[in-house]
Amino acid sequence: MTTRVVQWATGPVGGAALREIIDRPELELVGVFAYSAAKFGVDAGALVDRPATGVSVTGDRSEILDLAADVVVHAASKAYGDGNTDDIVALLESGKSVITTTSYNHLPTFGPQACARITRACRAAGVRFHAAGEHPGFVFERLAASLTTLSQRVDRITVQEFVDCSGISERRMLVDLMGMGKHPDEITVESPMFRAVSAQYEQALAATADVLGLTVDAVVPSIETETRAEDVSVACGRLPAGTVVGQKLTWTALRRGEPVLVAEEFWSATGPGPDWPAARPGEFLVRVRVDGAPRLNLDLSIGNEPVAGLSCSAGQMAVAMTAVRAIPDVLRAPPGVVVAPVFGAYRWRD
Image (cartoon, rainbow, N blue to C red; front, top):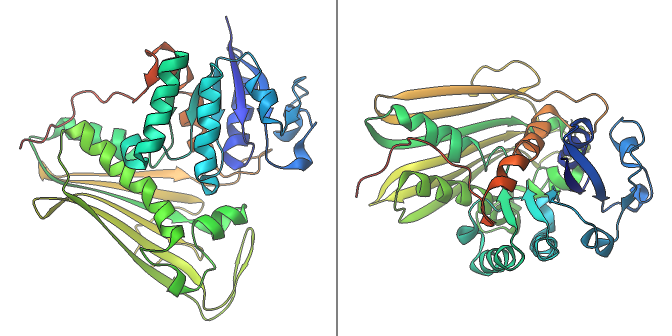
């Protein structure tokens, strides 16, 4: 018996998910929603270098809501904000489970209202909601937490992600969401852009704290920026001289005044910086450090080269795979919010 799947949004991540859904015989594509009018009426296969599927792309939300489907892979841009919550709730209320790559990885941290709406919709319709993703979604909450199975004592966990952003093809992602190409004065911990990004990593810290049984007193954010005296060329255009081309974003979770969980993002539109760990061209690096007994260090390189036939990088494809791979496990879970289990992790002692 096949699982009937809807793909919601067909940008870089959604396109990668769409192609995987088409390629997997146990999944039946029954609907595709897109935001771009240029895609309306196009066969889904044509978007991702695949033969015709007989499923045409639509921009009509009601058409998707009326479909008989088991699950929706929701890959809308994080830049759409509260509109994503409205769409997710409507999909759940229509009797479809939802797996999203948008940042809803710790609903109480995302927002009490959204948490209540999503939880209530799952309960009323008997469906499931799961937030997938690479970081947040996997690296801190599952990978780093699983490493602590080796720990007798954990003092601090630091996750660093080093990302060469120059290949991002969607300007809305690079500039509007990530803040590259903005004036440095616009990039502060109080700016709307930073708050939108910050919500993702605050959720990653909170979700990890849940896994570890850790009570966090506060999360302290900080940001540093880099500029260049000349224009910088990137995949989606040019970043003017004097605007932001590099950032270091940090979120530090404190327990009794001491840092216990630290997330650091190093973003560059000019290639790896001199203080970055060595990485091969076309890759980005995730580094996990567990301070305690014993000390643990893990470097994970993720290829970020363009994917043939898709308008995405391999790193964006990895995000999509966390959603598609989750489908059978999410549908087997009891109705409600589904959190991926972590077995044997260190439990903090109060």
